[in-house]
Amino acid sequence: MITIISGKGAPGATTTLAALAATWPAPVLLADCDPDGGDVAPGWLGQWVVAGRIRTDLGVLSHATATRHASAGDPATLGEHVQAVPPVRHVGLLAGFTAPGQHAAVSAAGWARLTVALAAFKTATGYPADTLVDAGRFGAVTPWPLLLAADLVLVAVRPTQRHVLAARAVLAALAERVAPHRMKLAVCATTPAGTHDVRAALCREVAFAVPEDARTADVLSGGRDGGALPRRSPLLHSTYRAARQLHSTYHRQPADPQVTNRGPHLLAGSTR
Ligand SMILES: Nc1ncnc2c1ncn2[C@@H]1O[C@H](COP(=O)(O)OP(=O)(O)OP(=O)(O)O)[C@@H](O)[C@H]1O
Ligand SMILES: [Mg+2]
Image: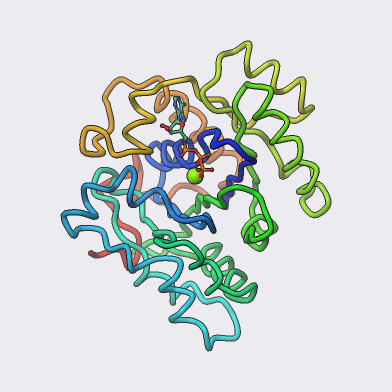
């Protein structure tokens, strides 16, 4: 489980995570857990929402409601809330909140149940799926269980003073509860010099950096070109490499032969 979080200023956390999911070398669950509202379905996947292929009433909130009487998290409860992502079939989406304040319906226990379910989620072939979680901007309603259980917490940051200062505050808050080796930077819309400056300013390891690439970012954040991924994309090229590196670092088991090269493979329960 890799969870991304950001400070103020919209550095590109959701866009970067969507790119990472799209280029992930194995089945992956993209969990849109931003308490301020999910941006993946209405953004990148808006066309499929309009066409009725992706339902916005299924996701984090419906899972919390359906499991409200459960005492513990159970991956078996998650499948019916996960939907296939039409442009990238190896990705399953747990859609986010659609209206302000909906996060209040998910209690601390609800986030804890979801975290357990996400961490143990399996593909249709019974192979453990990786999970990429968008935890939104750090704040009072941050879903902490999704940070505490993550193998890696990525703090999204752009190479500007404003974003670096915002990231510094997030890192300081996280440092109280997240081990240093589990906290790295995802530098968004950057250059090699910008990444160098961010690393130096924040004294943190950079997990990966993605270049400024407005066209691909517009696809992944706003559904440009109907959400179709461009063939040539500096952003996707960089996350392709990052995804492989992260997958090999954190995936301790051999690849599932049935999902080699990501295959035409849907996650368990994502049959819609
Ligand atoms: N690598 C990039 N190159 C150029 N533009 C980018 C890049 N990444 C993101 N953007 C743009 O930055 C804006 C913010 O992106 P995004 O919504 O992903 O940020 P965020 O950190 O998730 O914001 P929020 O805090 O609102 O959730 C969008 O317009 C997006 O297209
Ligand atoms: Mg976001």
